[in-house]
Image (cartoon, rainbow, N blue to C red; front, top):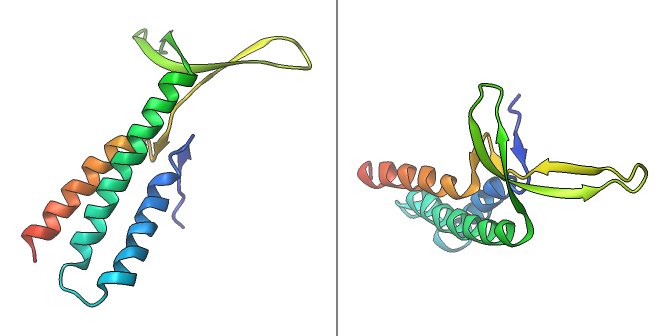
Length: 121
């Protein structure tokens, strides 16, 4: 069984892939280069979604420095929410990942797969 693992808006990566598959099946079905088109469209969609998420997160989240378990300081985006029951401020680290890879970097992965399909046509 394949387990999809995402955080935040990382679920948009497979959504972008399936949208690309739908576009290619609808308009370009039966061509030699369908795999290339699927991954090129996925590249563009992941890049656009990743940029939108990055701009949105920068405007709505705060930057904070945390110390990891290995003692390394790391700057992350956080959301501070006040718990209505207890009145305590809760801090949540914001990550938009799919299988641990940020959404914007999936465009690089998809571009690499596109190059592979282009070379092997």
